[in-house]
Image 1 (cartoon, rainbow, N blue to C red):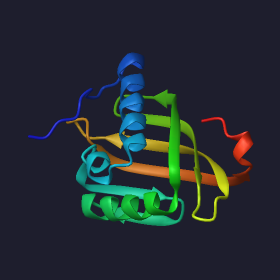
Image 2 (cartoon, rainbow, N blue to C red):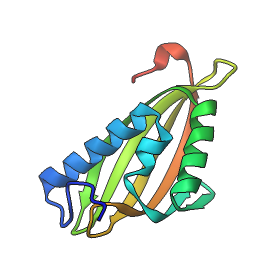
Image 3 (cartoon, rainbow, N blue to C red):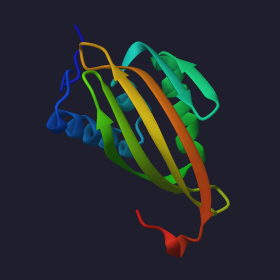
Length: 136
């Protein structure tokens, strides 16, 4: 049986660890690696896009990182309970034309008993920035 440590129920330490592991995976920009943190039938809402399952996650992330160049993400634990974690995040990227953006948002995560994320709901806003205003 597939497991992704740490497992719920979360403590402050294990929730913080789970957030750092997610940040590291997303910063790899490897859709296959990222998808392995989710259940095979994981349910996502990312902005106005709704996804179900790892194949859709891989397809979505592949397209995302083809558009969002030099992507860099920072996540922060906001709150946690038994099998749920809320995070705030920001990331920066530029498009093919060289315009930089900073995206801000919040995510709500729900995990199964094996530590795989079964639900991810993300609300995200983008702000155009100048390259010299980058923080990440």
